Length: 207
Image (cartoon, rainbow, N blue to C red; front, side, top):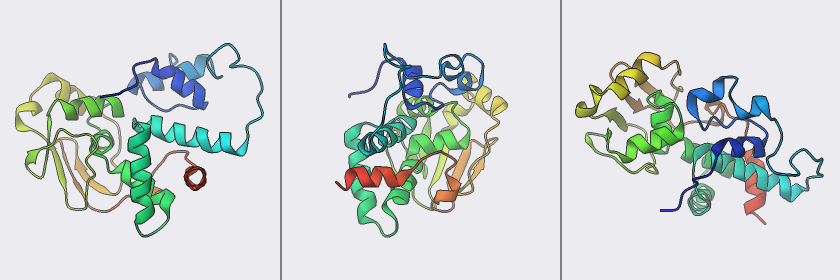
C-alpha cells in the first residue's frame, strides 16, 4: 500500500504550523517549527504570493497530512460528505474524526495518529467485541472501541496509560484506565480543535 516515508517534520514546515505528526517530540524544543519556521527547500525562505487556488490546495494538503490519509481516500471521504445532510466541510471533518485510528488517538492511547494507525493494524483493538484492524473504519454512535485483553498487559499500553494527559473529546465516553471508549455522539465543528478552514477545501473540490 502507498504511504509517505519521508521526513515528517518537512510536512509541518511546509504547512507553516505544527501538525503533531511525531507525538511528544512536537511539544519539545526539538520540534522543527521552533528551529526553522519556514518552508523546506532552497527557496523556502523566499516570499511568495499565494493565489486563491494555492490557499485552497495548501488547506487540503494540511488536513490530509494531519489525519494521515492519501489523496484517493481523502477524495472519497469528501464525496461521501457531499451526499450527507448538512454542510459538506463539517461533514468531511466529522468523517475524518471518526476514523478508527483518529478515535484511538483521541482516546489518549497513542502519542500520534501515525502510532495509532500502527497499533490498529497490529490488531490491538476490538470494535463492539470483534477484531478491528482497519484504520479507516468509520465509527458510529454506540460503537465501543477497546484494547484487546491480551494487549492490556503489554508495557506499551501500560506506559501510554500512565503518561497520557490528553482529554477525550465530548463526543466519546472514554476511560483511559479501562482502555476503552464509547461513541456517544457525532463530533461537531466545535469539538474539533484544529485550525482548519474547511470551506477552502469545499471550494477546491467544487471547481
